[in-house]
Image 1 (cartoon, rainbow, N blue to C red):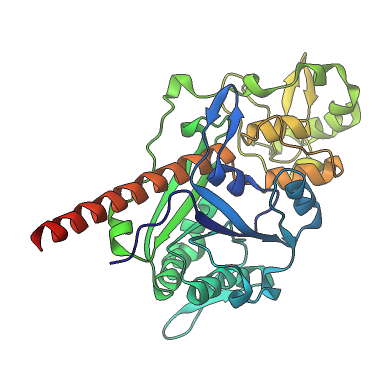
Image 2: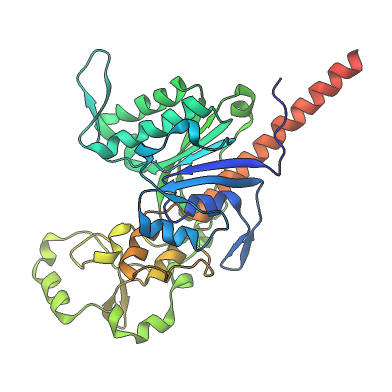
Length: 346
């Protein structure tokens, strides 16, 4: 029987770490909107991402430092030993090649990055892994891609749970739907795990207005020009995207495109005193549930938008990691009871 993991030293390796949303969430010990998210028994021992601006933000917010490196250049055997692997792997470009049997194909190089995570799992065999991706992965290629992705994880030696979670149901002021994939090398761990249940009722979800910066309303730089408004009005009959946000509801999903947000695009904008306003980088970070002491301004505003838009909401990740913590404790307690039973039988 595998020995119990020390709950103070669950080591984490993080691929595609970006600016650190998953890593902050799994470690805990942060405050968002006055609520404390306690420290969890996870410690990041390795982190990597290929975006130097995202890693700059990361390294200004964490004691441990991530490396700026393309995951394809990482040698799995050289990654420090770890108990759990994280990866919000890029999801673009999956396609199905007409083969017998069918296999995952790719329209460009980004689609291959998923296999780099699988390769690390095969080499290092951590006890757990957590993957995160967009909702569209479930329906990609007429629903054929996702089962194949799960099969690759299973072939690496893991039992897999997956679930679509809406961040707004877990204390995040954003209607962000993401698929979480949690893998377990041991069946007992798989059996004991349960995804977190929504803890925010419909009427009590965090509203967008709770994270907006009133001082931004005084700065002209955040407002769209009359020229931009006129351009939108000329094509308004062809548009049906509803980008102006209801301040009494969680925000629509934000993305890395906020740096180039347009009134003719799909990214959310605000209506302040009958004028259109973009979100500030700090507002975007709050919408993603980053605490206000998370440093952003070590890179340009454009780079801040991209890093924040690509991130996993720390509060949502904390909820998933907390659920995993409970399952580890459950497994550990069961092992302890079984060991005591065997000892008594001697």
